[in-house]
Structures are given as structure tokens and as C-alpha cells.
Length: 67
Image 1 (cartoon, rainbow, N blue to C red):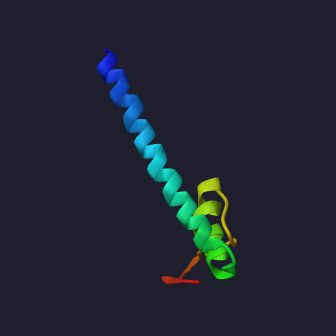
Image 2 (spheres, one colour):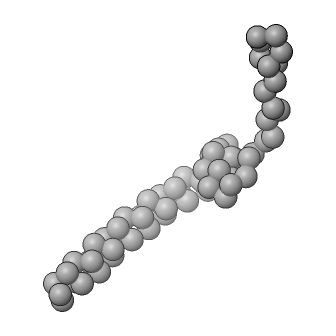
Image 3 (cartoon, helix red, strand yellow):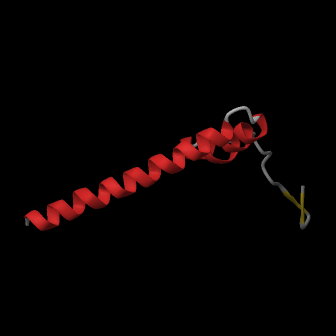
């Protein structure tokens, strides 16, 4: 039981370390790069929070064509 618990702790620590390094690398890339900040905000953060960056009009069908 102890071995299973230690394996879980070490695996979680390894994944946490890799996630930390990846986030740090992304943060360094975003420093001073306004286009990258805008892209990450619109394509990653807003969809994760459940909001749309821009409201798209509803698609309507009229006589077999989309408008």
C-alpha cells in the first residue's frame, strides 16, 4: 500500500513539475508580445471559461440556402 501511495505522489509531482515548466515557458513567450497575448486569451482562456470571444449570428435557413 505504501508503494502505491509513493508512486502516486511521485507521479503527481513529476506531472506538476512539467506543467510548471510549460506554463513558465508560455509566460516568457507572452512577455512583450501583444499578438500572442491576444491569441492565447481568445483561443484558450475564453473558451475554457465558457465564454465566446465574439458573438456569432445565428444561422438561418431560407429556401435551401444558409444566410
